[in-house]
Length: 591
Image 1: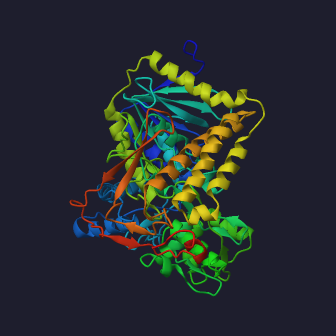
Image 2 (image 1 turned 90 degrees about the vertical axis):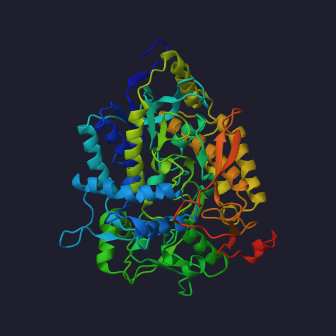
């Protein structure tokens, strides 16, 4: 207790929010440097989140330099549609070697050949870059044990709902000095004060009941947004998946399935990905494949299938080893990939695919002093609308290690209690408000309305400015006429209400950013601008919160320094490989 603030007060030098691999590596590094560290996790470390579904990690098998480094970088740069920060890409490739080798020493069981040597392979988006197969859950169990041994204090099942600032303001002109959280099981209030905060809260998705995505709804993103962090890549905030099999079940492991040789064909048996992605073909990005399948179906060549019949049993065994949920699903639904084609039905929704979040420098620092971010909780500068199939977990490890180092150097907090106490009171009042309302609208009603506005095929596949405006009109209506009436009878529903609010905020920011980028690139395809415009749009679109409220958006741009980067970009307009069905071409003037 602290005066009238009924909450548990915890102090530390470095506060890490999110217990994935990036958060674990940040916590371990900060503890190694002698700092007191608290790690807060909304669920349970090693039992939830994207890392528990990881099947491979980007892992160079040797140190790279010179022209060889440039060629490995080129895969990320071309795959990112030339928007990747090449300084980050080079740093990432170089340091991924060190971070993975540390984890090997710690006992993380990466896949090996029969002779015991490590088995380096490629996955989606890479012909040179190598990965190591691993069960992400086992990896996280090892890191969790190391954190406990290092003295990191873990607070699990605590959802961080806001950040604290030294001037008591959001957005702040000061620095971040802690966070406010609530136990999702008991409703207990927590205040964490710290010299620096590292966010590793994962991606943002709607409630899909899709593998790791279900509880990753963007609360960390919105906490950073509220204190004024600069965001980039929001216009690419669109998630695709193609692994809904036989109209019956989902599986994770899409990148690994592509990496072992999975191919996509239509009802006539034609392998079609070469038409949509002449560079990567069947190893293309999730969005590219999902949209290609949908286009085949819209144009009358569906249904479409995944073909694994030609894949060696040894490669299937590796898939099952590092992604055991795939084996369980195939067994439960009586699928034999060595003889059966699997019908695939994709979906496309607003959410993280390869980017969308706070910008960070080479040490993981955001534009707000004292706030660092790593992993999917950032703009993912090494991808930025990219297609790497295993580029997030190793990036999280690299960025986490660097952010942990920089957070320690930022120094302890000296913020007076009275400053953050008022902020904490306000945050708790907002969070618990749904429990004081009459029974009117449930969080599930909000999710349903958002889905109807954004997940329909016309908006998802064939965007125009008019269709984006239609979606925005509905999203603002949901905010103004539904969100304020949401009630929660218990703490689980209260958590869901908070998740819905966070996701809705990010969905609105994303659609506003989609309007601003008048071209098609990566996950963003606009029927009214069906080309990548490298003369006008080879740059980052930036957005931050203004002083007029949570959805007062201020846009800017960042030119990219291709004059000093080793991988050049082509000039002019690059036509999109996607065809537009005739019935949609009639609605707009398509060049």
